[in-house]
Length: 231
Image 1 (cartoon, rainbow, N blue to C red):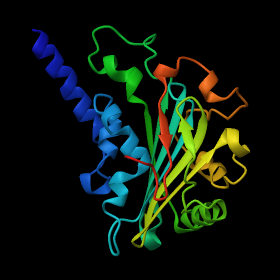
Image 2 (cartoon, helix red, strand yellow; image 1 turned 90 degrees about the vertical axis):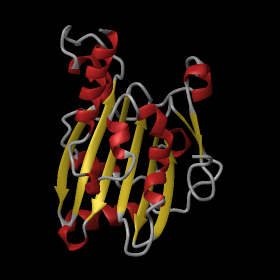
Image 3 (cartoon, one colour; image 1 turned 90 degrees about the horizontal axis):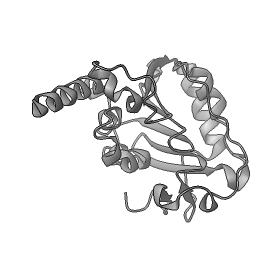
Image 4 (cartoon, helix red, strand yellow; image 1 turned 180 degrees about the vertical axis):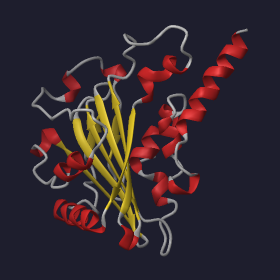
């Protein structure tokens, strides 16, 4: 009885994780859609490992932006598959209040995973939209080089940008407590194009991350010369 029940939950989770054709997604996108596998792939997803491994001339053209507005409060990700003169396909994922079980309906197997599943929305960007986004990223230093030595704590506000365009890998990161996102020029465009319906958690001034909350429950990302270190 227990194994049958567990199998049913796993089946629902895997079925719900794939809503686009496989060739329209990078390797780790289905992994982070699925609450059962997300934690195993999250750091590599943020670091764009699946983008970088396919980054070659004539290959993948993809931009991934991650906005961390304090982990377990809100995280927004934007996967943008560039399509040349056709524009781009954008997938928005919002993970907010993860683990809030106050609205789980007893007896609904799919609902058991709902607090961890997150919200997903898709949009088609025009060529003009893509041009505006690329310009905003270039003005932000969004295609690199990475700010080597920067550390990003899970209980802080930050952005990362992983990209491959015409065979060129790029990575950038922005830390709100460092400069109040002074160099970020792309957020306004993304939030306006975001059809998830989830209000954006705006950054606010807080004490340094290392002095807030239980340190054993937080994680940290370190930026190297080519992107995230050790992921």
